[in-house]
Image 1 (cartoon, rainbow, N blue to C red):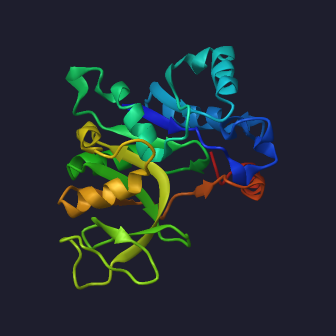
Image 2 (tube, one colour):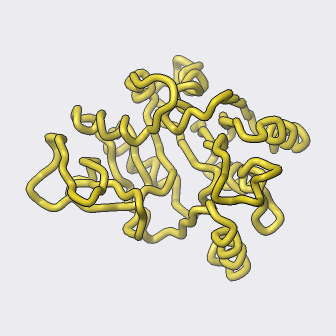
Image 3 (tube, rainbow, N blue to C red):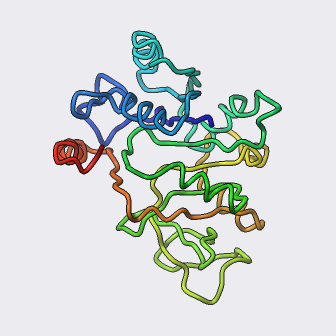
Length: 248
């Protein structure tokens, strides 16, 4: 299994920590967010990565070189302008399509500034058993960017003050609002379906594909620890969680 780590963002919510470094190199309990992410994903057998970079890109490249890529195969996707999740993935698509023998092998998309104990092996099994095009790790928690799923865990919309969906999969039942975690498992079949160009988010692509009948599914991850590390206060809380063995 391969993975893409999304690390190109400016990390504006982490200021002043990101005034002189990329968010991937911000430290939590003495380790960079990038090292924590790589180490965790390696425990699930992932040894090949592509990382998109933009903000202080050369620092990330030098850091990886100084650590011998942590013994992993790591490719860099440099973005001269920020391409957002969809555009970043589309630029890096070659990495997941380079081996014709593995075009059916799912891959992971993971934000560098989230930390969790989500069981990626179970998530991968769920993805394969359901023949999903994309599987999104979600939780029932407060969020300003909730997605809506039907009772079959199929994506049907995005939460707004008044929900409406053109998806044929939406039912008369109230859709279930769930918060996305920034962790996705995708089939390479999705990559040619990214018809958008330039800078674009992956979420509208998921909504478009779901409305076309593609399986964009929710993996319920409510029982697992998860934290967005977007602000200094989040880093401080995660450090306490480490000390109290909430994270391992």
